[in-house]
Image (cartoon, rainbow, N blue to C red; front, side, top):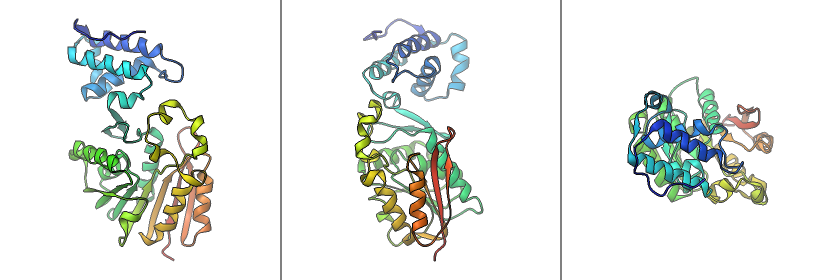
Length: 302
């Protein structure tokens, strides 16, 4: 279905949503949203900087869409039709209670990573305070979600990519009023930016796809999302190995290390803890689809 190159006629928000939904419905199966009408509403809400819930009344009441919004919406559809991931086309992605700016410099935050944050908060529920670290922060999603909770005195976000840190800093500024502790950003690989410090919590969603698995990835991931945030050596295990090995020099006694994992590698990650000295309460947890997704371990200090 062709997309108009310009939009000058007044159109209601509902009509714009319906047009976009029809265009999403016409996408190839791999790109097509599960619910095109819902996806169209979420895109409009994202472009307007509001929630879909807040948009429901204007949609129902026949409110007109600003011409500028209609033009931007059609531009999003055109981008998606040429293969751009929806979040990059819109420029924002939701994560827990935050809305983050995203582009091809960072991974798109995903719902399963919200489960990682939940487990990180759970293992630290016994007290407040201490420093939390998000290793490989990307858009800043995990770091900013932790800072929003008010459980820690500070959050440190690290990344090997200066471009990613630029995005994360912009998101911290965007969400500043929602954050309940300071967030600082450091450039470097794995735990190198934390040399000489002791922290209470390390959380990481590291690169975990083997290079040999690239061909099997959806094109929207393989062709658009940053390679350095996707792939790792040693069959996808290299970053886990490096972080587990370095964590005892950084974690305080009783501190926790929490990983997001590829479902096929979660128990191999747990085995890294089990093979090293000084870890207890190592466990693997599923995401909402039942796939093993989170691995946690507590450092004993021994």
